[in-house]
Length: 414
Ligand SMILES: C[S@@+](CC[C@H](N)C(=O)[O-])C[C@H]1O[C@@H](n2cnc3c(N)ncnc32)[C@H](O)[C@@H]1O
Image (cartoon, rainbow, N blue to C red):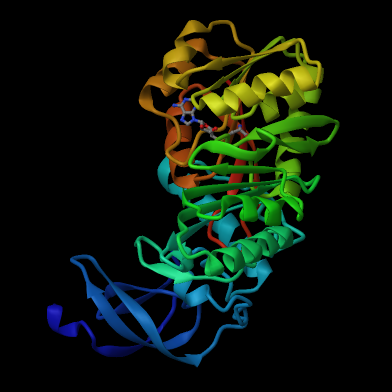
């Protein structure tokens, strides 16, 4: 088999896999072709041969797809952060719906004729947080699955003000002989409050602070220590305000985050629930937003910065009917019984076995499961299905130009 590596073939792309790669066949064997789109006729070169499949790159597009467009980013092919910038937005939306549909059918046996998707108005400049890496005088993103740095001047997914600050920092560092920065994280709120977090060594620190202060940046950290400004930046979501601390999770697409949270608010507004658990609560956003419609909310979260922020947010918004617990969901959930409903918003790896078993012991009347990975979502829904029915599923396109999609599932106890 190894001799077919480096060989060239002409193939027709049948469909896309869940990461946006084109799928074709050579002598009956599956080939994944990076950047190829359905129905395209393509000359490919095999670059890797595995037991059950091969990987290939495009040598020449013989017949191009109607959905193909030029990527607006000069780094698109090198960086790997975006996977779908060469296809039009409507086809990205169709891809995301089909992907979730296929995964739910395959792993959970759920037929989801009910999938709805909320599209994003903006395909670019939507991210309010970015991490750039540094190697000597080079700054940019690591290439996919590697530590090879692609120098980048600006990222078209991040908000414009973030790119301007990044430019200022690059300019400063290019003149600063003895600075050595490994990481630059920039966060921004919709009120244009900005936080910059550096890791590494900065020589002329006061000059850099002066430069950023005038932008204005509101908060600067160096190696976990605050060197200028406020400890947290402030975000406004509907009528509530939220502090964002350095290490706390916060959704990165402000406009689409509001659409997602609105689905959850609308759901609880119509219920008459007494007790809600907001699991993996981050800075307490969702829990706080639903407090007007329920009697009591308890949020659980493992990151200390997030819980500190959540408690400040409770105070800032003068809310009485919410409490936050610092700890792992899998450990703390066992302390609860008689809960009406649970919000689950885990990281990509989804729910662990212990948590799933505890949920089935508590058996809330309903569950709102928010997920950023439809694979782990499908696995968890399969488990929960013994006692719950999927009532509704909404997709929210939080990450245009990438294969990622956020899902909100409403489950009812049978
Ligand atoms: C997708 S975020 C959700 C945050 C929040 N619901 C929001 O909308 O901003 C997942 C959160 O789970 C937290 N987390 C991860 N593993 C956890 C665990 N085992 N127990 C509690 N929290 C955890 C992370 O720190 C992160 O804040």
